[in-house]
Length: 288
Image (tube, rainbow, N blue to C red):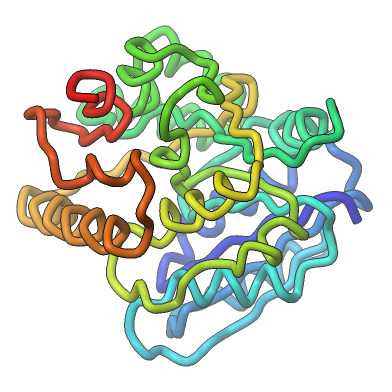
């Protein structure tokens, strides 16, 4: 087994179906990857959804008791059960290009150093007609066509402005761990375990992925971003109240991470430059 895809979910069987469909259509040989779905205490039909795909790919369903938001623990459970050398972490509603798992494997095997790969996520924040056109394209089961549409419509990754400012070679950034978002990333299973997996004390939205990214960074994993390792975020609206709550939780997480890690980079986590999408790397560039 070369790749294990670890996918937490919670009462999102519709989005889970879309993600699993894209995983079924990967160009990587079926015997080379597995999918581990970890249900964080959900009560919908996610287990039945997984069963529908078991004849078409290697998919396992795990369930843990609902004790509140425990995405980190769910991912840890999946990584523990995984048999692949490389772990691809994605969320429900992330729909992968048909070549994505092949490209993850190619990138990890390209040299001997352990790597953290940041996937490119198109379509985040797409709304209105753009969102409907993306949904229609993805609904045709051809994610690659939808990705080409996203490129033409400039429905880019929310982090693209950071790539524009700082370059695509994130190994040169002062703090590449700041964009280690588990919507779509990969790393060696042995490195994740050696670094201690996700800190399960993070029990609200945000922070647990970046904090693990710091430990991977400190353990000399090389961070890379590759736009050919790509996916689409299924378009859905976030209301103002939900967005405000996530911004607040992210701020709390930054201060928690700063208290946990005494790096020169993390010392900038309490400084602001009026960035709508907070970027530690931009803060360091401007104030460092």
